[in-house]
Image (tube, rainbow, N blue to C red; front, side, top):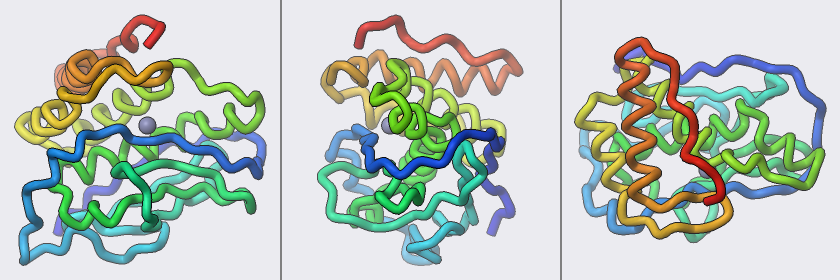
Amino acid sequence: MTAARIRFSIRRGVATSFFILLAAMVSSAQFAETANAQTPPLANVPGTNPIIFGVPVFCNDANGTPVSFVFGNINQLALSQITPQGAPIMVFSPTAMTTPRPLLLFFYAHECSHHTLGHLIVWAQTGQMVPTAEPDADCNAATLVQQQGLLSQQDITTVANSVFPNPHFPPMYPAGPIRAQHILDCYNASAQGQSPPPPPPLPY
Ligand SMILES: [Zn+2]
């Protein structure tokens, strides 16, 4: 078991009690691979310290509040919310139990990035989404999994290939090929010690 953990910087913000959603748009065709029977895809869930394919992870939001991983019957792989009680959570579909390791780690990091980058808090405060929230979460996630050695070049290519077929879904999601390239560009920039590239130009 690796000791690698997904860590995120903590920023101060205001508490919020809004209930808002951010979806991780991924195609359903990517779930064909079954989990290795020796390593459960998910353990220690629900909770704030899930174990994903043997990797213990955690996530704090922009206020430093631990984000809980829960299961829910949703029609995409994952989404992020702040509950009416003000608790930051990420909800994963039961299909996460058969989601390949690279995708599950990446989309955990993606959902966490929404919380860490304050996207949900901005929405709660203003009623507006950060226009580049989805590419920003993708880029932050790609950078994290590279820096922490969680995903290889082959793994991030698997992630990019999984989003490549996605349609353009305005106003938050650029077309799949653009999103896929941005994920690869962010990963590669991190691997080369460079600053992350800017998000694809608006509008999406
Ligand atoms: Zn998202």
